[in-house]
Image: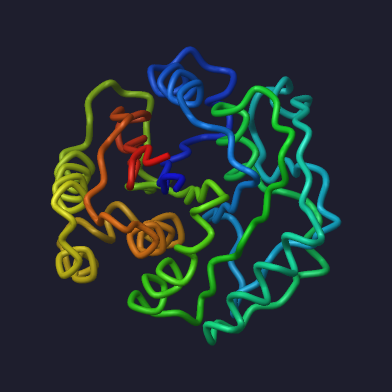
Length: 257
C-alpha cells in the first residue's frame, strides 16, 4: 500500500529557489517507492462536478504570470493513460461517485507538475488528475477520499494545495504573520491527532478566512484526510515563506509495502 500525501505547493518558482522546502521535497522524493501510477488533486483544477483530466493529456501549462522568464522555459514530461483513466471511472461509478472525463483539460497545472518535478526528477509513469468538485461539501470531499482508498494498492495519491494561502497579505518580510503561524499550528495538531470533528469545523476558526480568502487551496486536505486509512498524518516539511505562506506538508499511511 502506498501512502497518501498532502503537499503545500507554494509559489511555482520554488523549483528555481534554494529554499528549505525545495531541498526537503527533493530528499523526500528519493525515499518514495515508485508506484504503477499517480493520482493527483490540485487546488488549481476546480469543476462543478467531479472530472478527470483527458487521457490524452501530455503537457504542462504555465498557469501563472509575473515570474522569472526561466520558469516559463521549464520542461517536464508527463502523460495520462487511457486504460487507467477508464478503470478509475468505472470503479468510482460502482461506488456511486459520478465522474466524467474533461475533454477540454489536456494539460497539467503548476499545482501538479511543480510538485512532481520536485519529487521525481524524471517521471515515467502515468499521472491521472482529478478535479475538486465545487458542488461537494466537506463530508462529501472526505467521502471521495474514502472511495479512492482501493487505488492506494497500486497508486501514490497526492493532494496539492496549501495550509495557508492569502496572497493579498504576503510580503518579503522574514517576520511571520501571527494569524498564519497560529492557524498552521492548529492544522498541524489536527492532522497529527486525526481529529475529524475539528477539521470539519475549522472554517469557523477566527483565522480561517484570514488565511483562505478563497478556500480552494484548503479543500484538497479534506480529500486527503478521507483517503488516509490511519487518519493521523506526519509532517515532513515545515516552512513559512513570504511571511504567511505555509509549506506544511503531510504523509499519511507511511510506507507499508
